[in-house]
Image 1 (cartoon, rainbow, N blue to C red):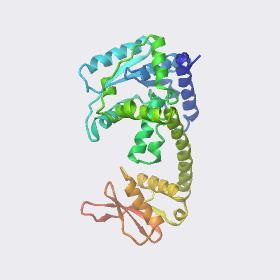
Image 2: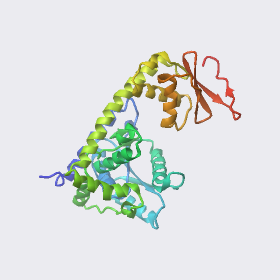
Image 3: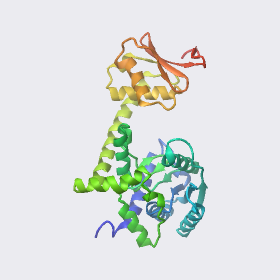
Length: 340
């Protein structure tokens, strides 16, 4: 019997595994499950409907109340009716349901703006929110990261558990979710945006991935998913190493850090240490070129000048330390509080 034939139990098992992982990790990053609540984001498509159905089955058996969240982006005529119908479907599955209306605007294009608005609305659930991303979505995410050259974190894709988000279906194909809906008598909504070639992900899904599958004789989505999982393990190890350095050599809240313990660290670890220190010091939206420039003050010191950072901050090297200073509007440094 094929996986498609077993689609419903496969989706339910995936939700159980995610919930077990969330409970195990809950002591470090509370997810809300301790309060007996679980949320599911539902667009009305096959992936999220199959997820909602699986959560509706598993949740009560795990002593969880499951709440469905439908985000109405207002980008299409009749979107409010579609959201209302989806909410009715969720109630028919035994879930409570709520429609969250958002405004989509801001920089980065329609895709990015819609994503920001959607995630901001879903965060208001204040508990673990399950998302219906599948192995196919993961493959698209990895390809986007590769194409943009945005580093290993992007190529590592999405994590199954990344509180407040949970993605039980990252190991499942989209065919499984479609089959699960069919077997449960659920009729997914076909979002016209999902076939509109003006969106990058649509072209990846409809043009690039099929071509790669053809050229490489199949298995591309699986391979990209394995690549993401392997990179996540590597990133976790590097992050743990960097965190140990921070805990050993950095006083919480300090605007200075000694250069000596950083010089001989591998570059990948040292930049993580510096990134953590700078973000803790108030730097926002730190770019890769800015981080590399700050790292040059340690790894390639030639007496160069200070590095200007977002938020009116500068980092400079003096007397064997890196010092993070705030500047006023004229560009003059503002003294740090005593002891920092």
